[in-house]
Image (cartoon, rainbow, N blue to C red; front, side, top):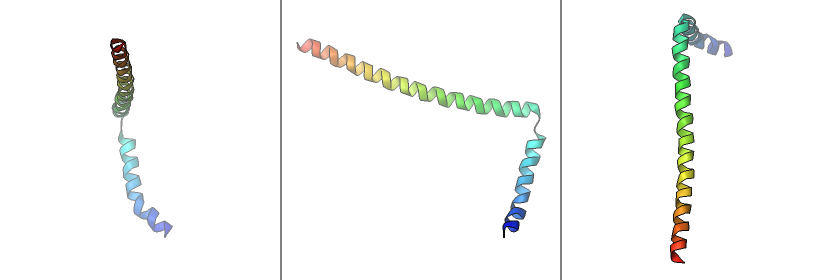
Length: 72
């Protein structure tokens, strides 16, 4: 039973190995560049989102302080 699974998956593994072995250094450079660029975009988006949340909280705090001062 296990042997049948291995035999049925062998062509897929061989295909992946063939594709990976056929990639040149330039191809790997492009792939790694795309992956790193995507990671950079996601990290920047997360930190900008957090910064926007912090700035929104600070804005509302200042507005509330200004309203309290005008009420006095």
